[in-house]
Length: 77
Image 1 (tube, one colour):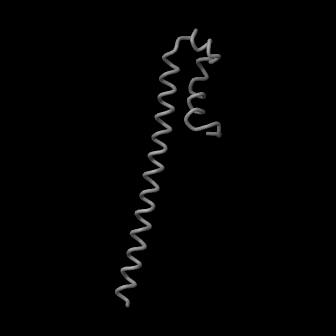
Image 2 (spheres, rainbow, N blue to C red):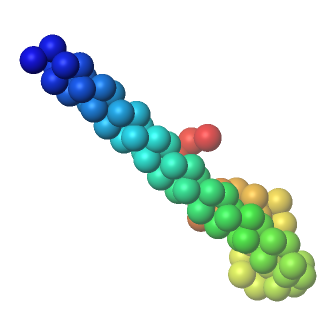
Image 3 (cartoon, rainbow, N blue to C red):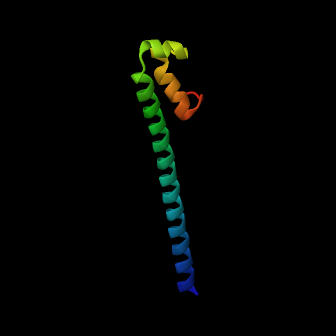
């Protein structure tokens, strides 16, 4: 019986470790995707001329803020 209990405790520990690892990997994957959206948005808006930005109603100083909102939403940093 004691041997079985030790295996069960070990199994629970391994399961928790694997669950935590999977959660960390998912979080990293989500953050990477958000960074990619931010970078892509900044790059694409930065390639536009001042005239094109004006046509869109965007001032060049707003590019980073707009990219942040596109990637992470409107929550405070």
